[in-house]
Amino acid sequence: MDHPQSYLQQHRTLIQAWNRHIEDEWQARQRIEHAFLKEKQEAENQHQAALQTAETQRQTALQAAETQYQTALQDAKNQQSKAEQSAHDSLRHFTSIQRDAEKEMDERNITRIQQDAEKEMDERKIEREYSTTKPTQLPLEDQTRFESLLQALQSGPYQRFQDNCRDLDCAHERRVYSPYRGLIGSFFLNHLLCFGSTLLLVYIFYHYGGPGKSYFVVSIALLWYSLVLSFELFSQLNKDDKYTIDITYQSFLYILGVLVALFVLFRPELSLLNVVVLIPIVYLISSIIVAIIFALIQWIIGIEFSMTIKGDDRNSYFSGASTFFISPGL
Image (cartoon, rainbow, N blue to C red; front, side, top):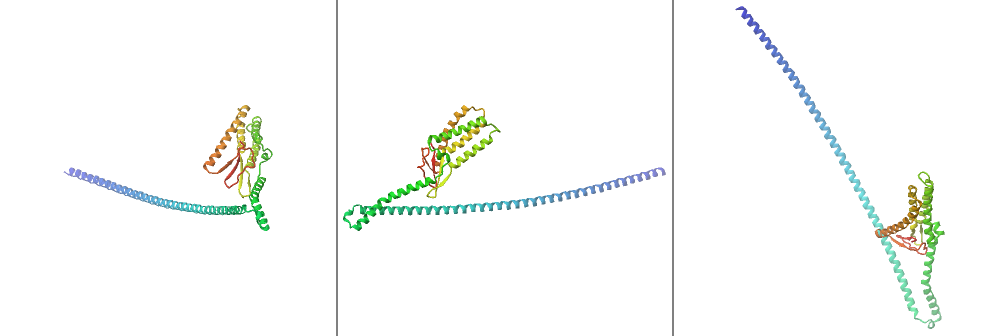
């Protein structure tokens, strides 16, 4: 009986030891799990804190950006309003100045017309009153006064006509022409000069030109045509303190000649016969195009152009603030 009791006691001891071992292992596992959950909770808390901080920073940055954008937009609107207000003020000031100038001009014109009409009426009245009077029936003193008055009336319009003619001559003496127009005033020679100089320039470019060879010749030609154009567009001041501008079709044709010459310069496959045939065609087409351009300008803008069909008519010109003299030579 002692042996089974001893065996049973050992068995109980083993069971108790095993239970203590299991209990210790379970407690250790509980401690590990508790530590893991604690660390996990701390990590989650840190993560949430980091997210909250990032969200706060993002909201702050967005708010700052929105504030800057609203400030910049408001500044832009203020600047635009100031610019529009300044433009309106400038336009109002310009309109006021223009209205005052037109009013002053109208008043001057009306005053001049009234003075001319009154003077003409007085002259007609005096002439009508004394035209039926016989000088022989007047006393000597009245007859002498009548004759002097009649002579003054008869010489008045003629004297004004002479003064106008003298003013026109003086204006033409002050008129500036380019050298070739002063030397060559003929219609045919003027056109022959334009056509011949263009053809000669094309011939020189064709035989002696080429890329890299004739830039100096091209520069000299462009300088010469620029001088010719500047002479053609030269303005002179006439007796009414208004500008008269002399524009001719030859000015545009000279520049066109340079363009054709440059075209031939860089197109060496063209023959000289093609160039000779091409120049008159381009000459005539360009004249038509220039006439159409002037007609369109007159129709759209309303600028008055006074054209003459004569080659160089120095006795036909019109002066005015918006009136141009054109001598097409066609």
